[in-house]
Structure formats: structure tokens, C-alpha cells
Length: 246
View 1 (cartoon, rainbow, N blue to C red):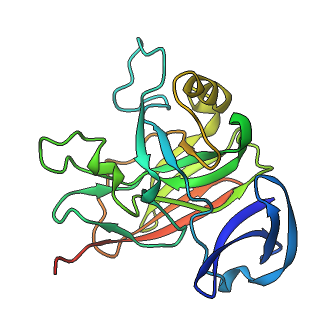
View 2 (cartoon, helix red, strand yellow; view 1 turned 135 degrees about the vertical axis):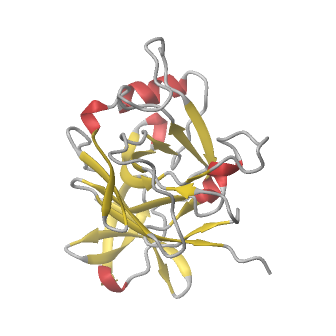
View 3 (tube, rainbow, N blue to C red; view 1 turned 30 degrees about the horizontal axis):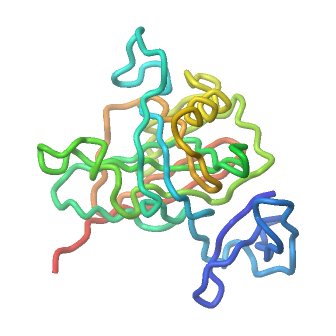
């Protein structure tokens, strides 16, 4: 099932996608949800982030060639993004840091279900900004702003993450590309390891790392579009803009 959240008369609702249509979802979306009546064609429904994560846990180094990777690493490097950084698959990325360089990172993400199971998979963009004030930790404000984690377009509960191409495009130019099989830590390992020192809750999201850049880093400029495309899962399309000071 492809689980979505969408706007219905201004209110968020659970739904599922089938044959280019969105259907209402009955019951508990975590436990045997049921497809209901059609809500509308997919192209005309406003999709939101497919869940509201309590927290977003990100792997910083999980592909060969990643910046900072050393032969002595025996466990993943992780950092946290707040759940409030999540945004919809086609929403704007809005930087609150005027003049700071911002870039996108294409990532395969998993969503936690009940009892530390993997509910399904979704696409993610781990948006990042340069160190905000020169003294702030790079992985704090620079990754935590609202809209800095587009997710979607859905959570696919039947998706197989094996041998999938993960790509990122900026204004149509390929900037990142990798294969999910190349990840240093696979999903079961990651969930089990995190569970030894952190409580994982339903709807938590784990970003499994960005594949290596294929061109030098490209920074986002006003109006640029960043696309995350994951084989068999769908894509995100987000425009970038800077928040204007009042």
C-alpha cells in the first residue's frame, strides 16, 4: 500500500494511492488499514508529508566515497533533524538563513512502524545550509529549519529497497547518484543498532544517507528546483527560495 497524507477541505487526512487516484484510508494506518472511497485524482490532490515524524534520524556517512569516511569507522555517524523540518513532496524549501549557502541531498528513507518494524519507505531530501553563525555546530540549525526535509510522495509498505538507483537533480542536472546496495549499513542493521540506545517510535523517519556527488557541490539559488528520484518509489520536486525579512 502507498500511504499518503493529503488536504481535504483544509484538514490533513490519511489516504492511499492506487492507479493515479487517492483513496480515503479507514482504520489504523499502522495496523491493517482499509481503502475507502476515492478522494480524487492524484494530480489534483494536495499531498502533504506522508507522516508527521516525532523525530528524523539521519545517517551522515553511509556510502563509499562519502566525506569523512575512514577505514576505522565501526558504526554509523548519525544526527537528528526535528519532525518539524518535514514538508511535502512538492512544497517549497524556504531558507531562514539569508546569504547562507544551501544544498539538497537525495536519500532513501525508512519509516518506523509498531515494535521497531519497518513500516515502509519514502523519498527524502536532507536539505543543509552552511554553518549558520560560524560557531553553531554544522549539524544543528543548518539541517533543522522548517521545510529542510521534504518527504514523500508516499510511504510504500511493499517496497523492496534492494538494488535501487537513487538520484538527485538540480535544475535538471544530475548531481548525485548511487545504488542502495552500496550503503555501508543496511536497514535492519541500522534499526537494530539505533534501538540499543534510542527509543524508536511509530512514524519516526530514518534517512539512510546520501549517495556520492557526481559533480562538485551545487548550491541552491532562488527559484532552483531540486528533484529526488528513487527507482520504483517516486520523486520529490521542490523549489528553493529564501525567506524575505519583513
